[in-house]
Image 1: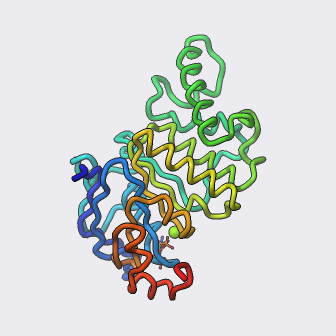
Image 2: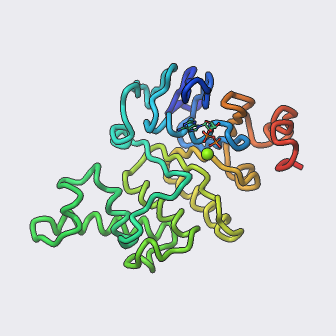
Length: 256
Ligand code: ADP
Ligand code: MG
């Protein structure tokens, strides 16, 4: 029995009268790759927003490493070791790659983040330490050769990898990725798959919302399926793949 790093009980999130997420409960074991799948509008991004603190639930509870997350906003959760990327890319397009990653270090800087972008002898040691780590993270996602280029100059798939590097700069224990393979070509998907395995081997717990079923089935330890905001099924990839309810929700398309 593996320890659960994150537990959600009966989460509800309504927008107006409409339930985007209804009565979702899940337990994420430490150091697994935990996929969340479901058709468009199933509530996957809303669930990530609840787990990461972008939204507060209308009902239900969340605990991370035994600690109640109620009322804690994203920034506070980052400090506890919860990081995420967004379905829609959010980078500083006019800053360099390495500056984008440095921006991710803000929560364990010894000085304010903006001071890292200006010269100053007093700051050099700390900046050098962060710079070294930023380059290591860029190496991890295959982008170190472009460290000084503008983030906006990167191809789409590379921007998604840069977002992962920036999220890793917060040194997360739990990293949540919202559709990391969206818009990636086949070789980029293979690279992403290898990086997810590498992060797992380094002890990171990963929650991956993903539409690419081939990737999900190959990389996940556990798959949680949602439909219309509700729980549909969860289990091993092979169990999910042959579950009639899941096949029905997708009309068989991705599972044919
Ligand atoms: P998924 O990521 O699985 O495609 P979402 O979580 O984005 O689904 O959305 C689930 C449902 O909640 C959708 O019907 C969507 O229209 C609705 N929804 C999501 N965010 C909002 C919002 N900010 N305001 C109103 N409705 C929303
Ligand atoms: Mg979504």
